[in-house]
Amino acid sequence: MPAVIIDNGSGVLKAGITSDEAPSAVFASLIGRISHQRVIIGMEKIWNHTFSELHVAPKDYPVLLTEAPRNPSTNRETMAETMFETFDARAIYITSHSVAHNLPYAGGGGNTGIFVDSGDGVTHTVPIYDGCILKDGITRVNWAGRNMTDYLAMILTQRGYSFTKTAELEVVRDIKEKHCYVALSFEQEMATAASSSSLDKTYELPDGKVITIGKERFRCPEIVFRPGGIHEVIYDAIMKCDMATRKDLFANIVLSGGTTTCPGFANRVKKEITALVPSTIEVKVTAKPQHKNSVWIGGSILASQPTFQQMCVSKQEFDDSGPSIVRRKCF
Image (cartoon, rainbow, N blue to C red; front, side, top):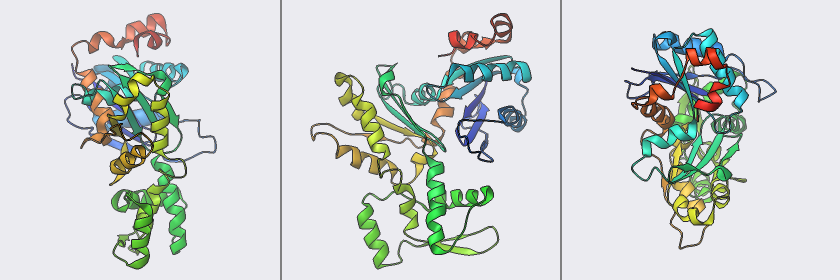
């Protein structure tokens, strides 16, 4: 039986049916920001929109939902309650981003590696060795693509451009995705920008005005690397793992999430981590062509397994045992 796959990202939701090669519904799940960043509201409306976009009724399909690593059990119980009590879902399964992310790479060294997922609002590192998650190395940092967008908006003010409203920041995000890149050598790129206009690009705003960006193109993603960058987060996560696993983890660093699709990202991560380890340690960083959708694809692979129906929490099981059933059946 086909299943609905919903990848609940920190800023973008991706959804589709297991028969799809890629998510068919992709939209921003963040439409405003409040002062308390730990508060999430409107999930019911977001999922209602999701099912509408997919033209499916959840009572007719099992639903696989992704969650961030170390998501509190109370959150996943709330997810289950909403799916069963509001949407009358046929069955559900909740899995971690890290587990789903790992599946597209299984069989190609995918049973061992450190998986780095950086989306809109959160970056995670999850080391896996011989198929087992190494919990000591799981890391979560509350910065990602949204911080790059905010920083780009700030440095564009130095050119006299102002982007402050939520809708305007969406324009900045588009500029980031179309024109920004990670410099392999920040100092060298700054020297190039100072001596010529070869790096300049133009962008047409919704009102027809054309703006020019130059060194902002690589200054924006530089905040991911300094001060205190993602390479240090990855390095520290690996160093928290058993010494016997570290060499293999450094040799299989796998990237996913929209932030990591910025051109030059993987090469810069490799360069920075290589500088942190002994010369005898091989550092390999992989970013597959579809790594922006790897969590969704992994969820689809999981939901296509013959055993998936038995893994799910059914409506009857939920009615009999209550929300706590997800603690026992969903891993």
